Image (cartoon, rainbow, N blue to C red; front, top):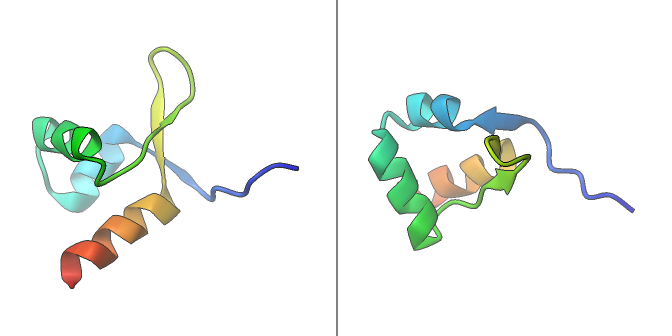
Length: 60
């Protein structure tokens, strides 16, 4: 059985949506604020669901 993860966004798309810098994005990843999905060695994606979780936590 596969898990539904929704639409996948690139790192660049997430950076633009959140209006943050690339180093800040990677700080969020290291801090566990946002989970990424490794597609291949050079491709990482973030699910819209994960992005929405982050946005909800930031608006509280």
